[in-house]
Image (cartoon, rainbow, N blue to C red; front, side, top):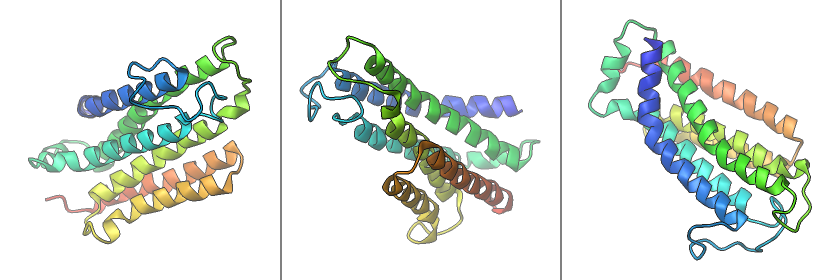
Length: 220
């Protein structure tokens, strides 16, 4: 049953993942100077130092946030269209298993489709002869932090989607809290490991809240 639920979530999130991956690959190729549409985006300083004097990290953060929002709201709200959630939740499996499977698939899809462009761009930046700039692995700290932090946006969107509250008010509070936490982490500019620890704590709180709401909400 769990494998069937996972397959359902993968199938339903695949279009979002494909579109998100295509958008991020376009940004990565543009930053490397291989854009298929060079006039669509313009680098602020072509040939600048990767991750320092280019706009890839900022553009990646915006695109990854869009992917996280789309995945979170689609997985939490998609089953409500056509009352599919009644069919899913009446299967012989605990609600916690259903929503834990949704979260596991959603996070895996987010991390996979966002990691590939970052890995390709980093490989290009670290390869000698690809650009006339220095490179140190410490330069990837901001992009790695952004990549991990945006997963909290996904959890905030998911929780906002299943909460039984009005949209204008408390229902969007988890998403607002996730966004605020990311802003605070960015302002503090602490080490990568401290950022990761904060993300893990915030993510655990949101995931626990999602499982609690799924177990106590009347979906009828």
